[in-house]
Length: 168
Image 1: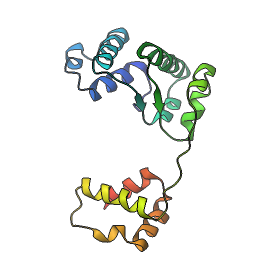
Image 2: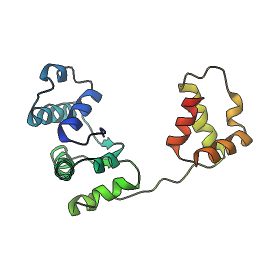
Image 3: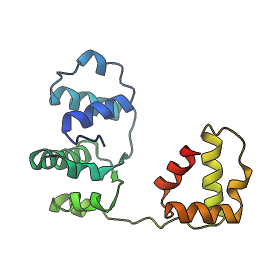
Image 4: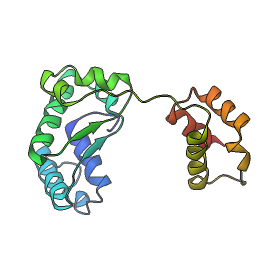
């Protein structure tokens, strides 16, 4: 979800994420209809089975008219593509969806548990260290005491854990 939650920005970001080569040819002045048609064509052609929208809580940052238009977009995409849409974000994401009774029935909130010191968190940390450009090997990150410190410092949320790992 873009930080500016408008339909045009959403389609532009979606098309960019899809690697649409023609998005640059359409240009910045593209009409929403053109962006929508291109996005739907590509999503159908690649056989999209689910659409995951992260940072859905950004929807609340928009003007009321933009929010209503975006909620209409979500309903439209679900119907046009006949696929489930998953919205991820903070608790505010659920508040944004609840403003539309039809969408509220389509999105069931699921709160993720906080990470706790243990084998699963060690696996998460190991995957982060394997993919992040850490300056030196850091095998001690998965030790019990270090895991407890990471959880205490980050509150056990995956976003904060990743931020800490990136800072490392």
